Length: 128
Image 1: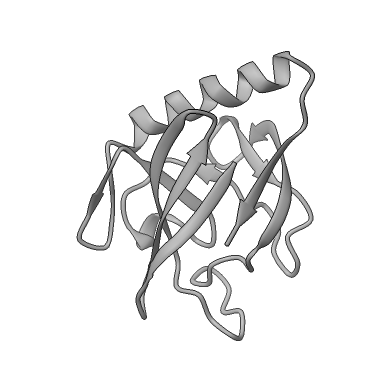
Image 2 (image 1 turned 60 degrees about the vertical axis):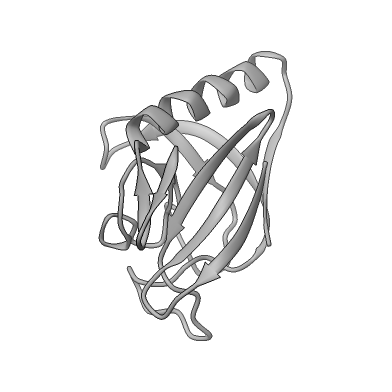
């Protein structure tokens, strides 16, 4: 997967996520030089992705591994930076400062990831 951040505002970051043949829009916290817990986007880089059970959301979700200075970074549904706490939100469309149709986007993304894992492939996300 590849996430290209294209709108960097003081309170949020918006981007586009390519996952196989699918394209999603993303919403994250603002990119900051210094991490502020719960309101900072993760650093650009490449991270391995697994799916495991999220205690917070009570269902399996994608988890990014080995993100420097962050723990529990997931890709999940939500619409605005208030929903992210450092995670990546996915949507089908963009809003002014967020994403829309997030639950549907998450179901499509989970189907794509599960198909990759069923083929025995490792999954990575490259964030630029």
